[in-house]
Image (cartoon, rainbow, N blue to C red; front, side, top):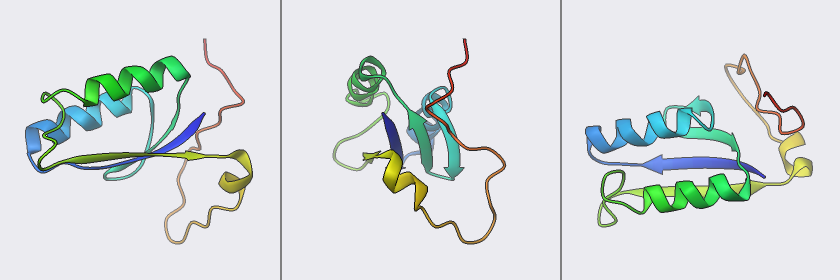
Length: 94
């Protein structure tokens, strides 16, 4: 499944941990926004990891996972600088 993952993390240390973790799963498209293709197991793993205080303080921070269908991804409008790469869930790198 393709997800748009957005976060708002107050503390620098936690924010850096969140971004480093997400870099292993997708492509950063803005400072706090990633496009990720996740299997159900990967999605569950990220939910568990982000549920710990190492990554998030639930009183201050937030991460959002927006699932995006292929149809809706095709109509995304990008204004300004275009990304050099795109996340494509139809290609698997082994």
